[in-house]
Length: 242
Image 1 (tube, helix red, strand yellow):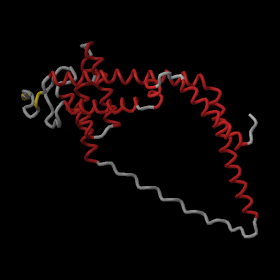
Image 2: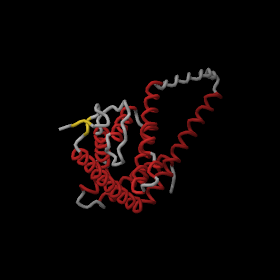
Image 3: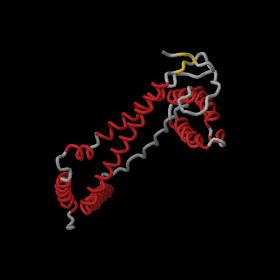
Image 4: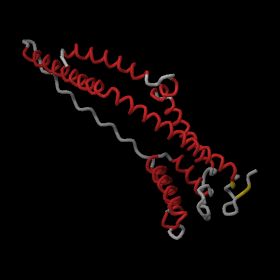
């Protein structure tokens, strides 16, 4: 059952068990995501080490092919200019630059207010005499700055409510008059974000190879066949005898 925060009767105090459950779930998913990323990167580095020569040759030939195509295009243009019926093309009028989208001034002011309120509460300097809180405050501040600079208003509102609902383990403080959302909104948004990142990481082809192939290194042989065919085609197109 929800019960009301004495400091702000309009803000329900959430059961600690619900908050802790979400925080633990987020931490577990973050650890799993990091593990997936590290395993994938390790496997990709191993693949590259086995195919380094083929990868470099394919890149060189691809660049050469593009350069040759551009040179042929330029040559045809010059030949056309020497023709009897050549008429210079009319210079194209420069395209008008799109009008920059105006930032919603009211929304920016709201973001600025929420940011300042939260920053005044969690800034590490406030906890200079509490060493155990400085590191936590620094971490929260860093995330607050990132959300303010890169996130939208809804995300900042959720993080603002998360901070002032006492979910950050920092000492409590009187609540601002306009706290919107329950402290759980931000945690739910974080959970959804990490779940999506984990879904993308697990659906990366190299990770699927690593986890679904009986012998993941068989993928190297598949890539060797691909690069062999690709390099042969590029050599024919560029008439290169590399």
